[in-house]
Length: 335
Image 1 (cartoon, rainbow, N blue to C red):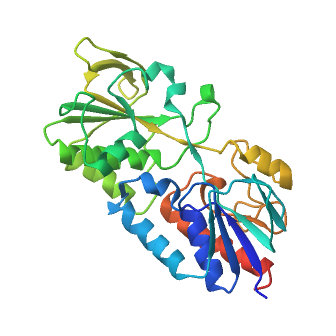
Image 2: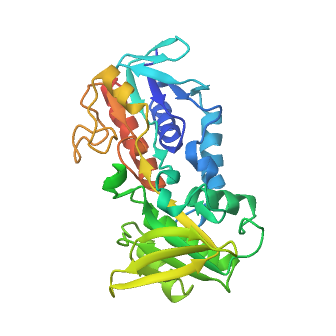
Image 3: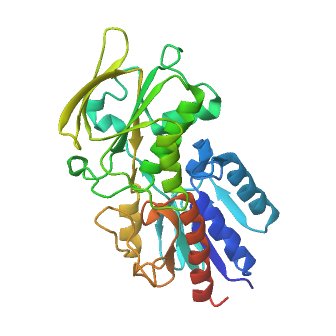
């Protein structure tokens, strides 16, 4: 009889973990609370730094899942777990030999930062809103006209003690560069500005992409935070900021203000962690047993982590961690 391993979360991490476990001969049950697999990748347009369509990655992962003998359970919310069982909200108890938690992250709610006017002013959007526009092929101001000046604000809901989100979300900088380049290609006549705290380009191809944004796309990068945004009489957004490199205050009106929202831990992690005795990091994400040699293991034997459930990560890192977590869970189960 096959060893049964339950993977919680059907996003990128969960699908990759399930596929790797199936390759190693495990009986895999993939549990997803939404009605379809894919997680937040379903809402993305293209991926940095290669501009690969997100749909290509998602379609291939789904194809591999469908071609496997992985059991998929959608519309099922996990409320508690141990290393040997998973409890669902509908009362079902699922027995297993180990568990891999891949339940991902929650996007920061930009409306909490009231000073930026998200949800109040027509032409203030989030990076998620912009991805949807890219995907739907309809990028425009609220009135449907073309923007002439666009501003991106980095670190909304990241590295911010005021909203209890002190961690770096890791992918906001490169997302801001990617989206700015996409806007410049759509609107070559527009002025595009990126307001940042620090530019953090850590991945392969990221620094080259940043240089291309400056040198070939003529995107302006301003080191400084926007302090507030307000509407103008003609429907634009006036922003106030300080260029911290020169020490000069800035004030400008833009047609679109894009807030690059960060990652935060899921609200249900507290209950899940308490049910299994799992440790959490100060950021609220799950805390691995060890950051170097056991970064996919929890403090509880038989429970493993993959993807952004333990910290913000890129999709490439998430896919790799899914393989590592599957290998660790398979070894634990005796495969």
